[in-house]
Length: 421
Image (cartoon, rainbow, N blue to C red; front, top):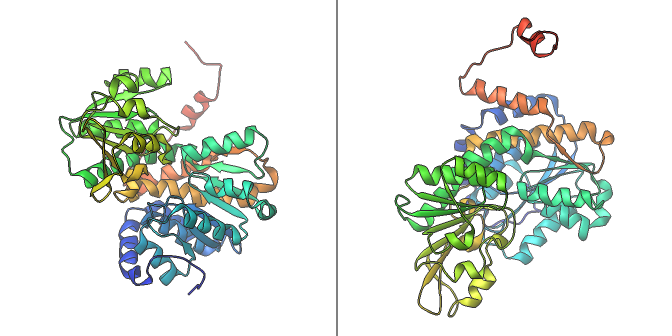
């Protein structure tokens, strides 16, 4: 067993392994990839550092990368998303060094990031780009070892594209987030279900009849809106993009600025990738008992310092993951999971079935990066279409779903221009 790790308690390992096995039942695509990796060892000897949410699904990705021959280290991508029993199982049963403790403070969080960089990675795997960012800002001496990386989230891809645009990105990145088999499913169905799961677990409130204000209408927010509506919520969407706002209107939701939605909402959920989506002037007009949560990668979507400054005294922890802020006039605002990802901090994150496709993209993109890094520039690349298509094909097969295949005549028609009316 590796002695270089930092987790909460090794004795939690048996429970973590059982939960990993349960998750694996819903991850047939990753399991098939792992079987191939075990035979072919495409990542043999490659040092890989992953900064991801330490969950049962991530654990099965780690096992797959290890089966492919990678020498990997795993650190948390969020201080509140770690499942401590899973971290223990990876260290105890699979000898994968893990640096992650649920509830770790920022100092420990960055200490763990540096431990992952001490591994001298050749490939990085990120969820929010904190690992890449730290490498570029504080550990530039380690950049020479890195041949490429992957990124899991919308927020991370935004940061990395900004780095590439500024000419400071020092190695190529594959944007796993942008694969159709990732953001169509993980972001919409995974985030949608798990976010409402987190809100309900934290509060035990009835969604039916409540006004649910959803910040943004990207893929994650689409999923949140769908699930809130499905539970009987009256959904209001706020947006800055006219096309997305129009889509939300056509999907049947009320659309208005956040300042207009703030007095109406019972539950607020942000998922935009931007800062201060809910700000002090929004908190000022919220009704007594408003519940505020975030499902975007960073808690900066909510201006929590402003809320704390407005409140009378420190917040009161009234339930696990629920902090009560009392405003000067006696109104109370309830902040869930300290503004962190509510689906991971207050629940278990995405269902395994959708993470199966996301992490299949991670595994195959790492293999692709290893084989093609010499031909790639220091920019952000999409997942190759053939990888995306193959993952969808395997997933359908695992679900027992068959689809049509183009005939030779149909294929010829689609690639020709001579035939018309």
